[in-house]
Image (tube, rainbow, N blue to C red):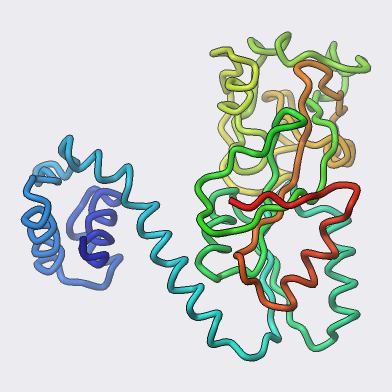
Length: 302
């Protein structure tokens, strides 16, 4: 499949419009229509219904593959581009919100001390965009947080030929507003909170679908949905009593208006994992070395 046609196909279904896809891609509407027709001719099946613009069953199946295929193509292009780079005076670090901790800031300070001319860029993103930035070369390193059983890796998307390292582990906590009946507990069981009111903050806190999977329940239904990467905005909602949320204990304890209570069952850890391509730049390797210690990490290559 021609990747240009595939990108047009994804844009049409993302925007649910040929004209809006054309504007986003910088094409004419006629060119977009020709791309879709050419892709359908290549695959021998209709992919997009025109009025309204919706995927056919074949189009839905192709959309299951297309974003990952395009990401891997971008990753391959970025990998080849890195071979041409002779000097590195800039490093971008992409982090999910709870992964950007004082320890990370200290590692960046040490790196700047060792390389004073280095320009650092820190990008706070959702978990999947962090992975995409690393694979496509927009970031030299990525830090992604999540929750897992102590011996299990995080359920990351397909990261291709990349290396994943454990950078930190700590207890998971549920955040209660001051005065909540459970705020005085020494520990809580997640299974006792399945019917509580929760805030769904998939890019900032532990996603509720992850809690459902770990506790094997259909509970943890949201009362409020929070979009974006603003931890303090999320904390304000939780402190006002709009719902519970789950974060790493050390971070949760610093947020105003909330009491952080550790989770005792099921046995879980909040883990931060570092992601980099298999041939990182020298300065990216240096930062990875500062972020990963013998006490907290070992490599698992995926």
